Image (cartoon, rainbow, N blue to C red; front, side):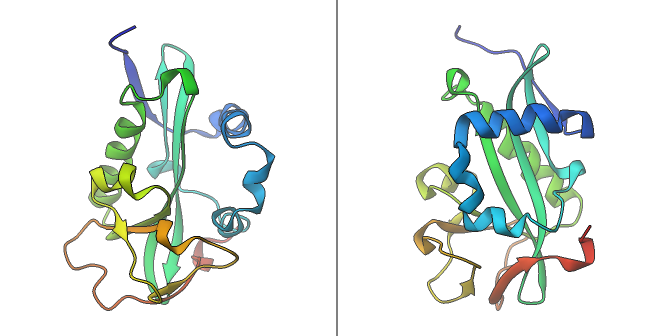
Length: 170
């Protein structure tokens, strides 16, 4: 299998169970104690900025984006991004990232943060947030807290607590 015929589609409510099973397989039960999951407890991810990757009818990957604020500045939190293990290192994650960031920018969003591996995410413009600039709830490895500016200079002067965007609370 050298080339995959992958389709990237906007997530729909019907995808929720399949995505949850994918998260369970790839992240395990420990995912619920991660700081990023704490931010997801009261605010739903944005379906129009969350995507699935499929090969035929098989769901092989997913990415979600959550509305957050850094201090008083609106932003997005990307994640989780996951791809079924047999389909990793084949560009599926990159396709999901490219689509989610492109659509976020097209919809007027300016900043996206995530907790992840800088070596992987720097390829699409993420960089480590300077130490002490933001505070994330719960324990977090701040060397893995990354930001991407969808608009140049959008992170200038931004600092403070990272929290859910309560205007979008359920």
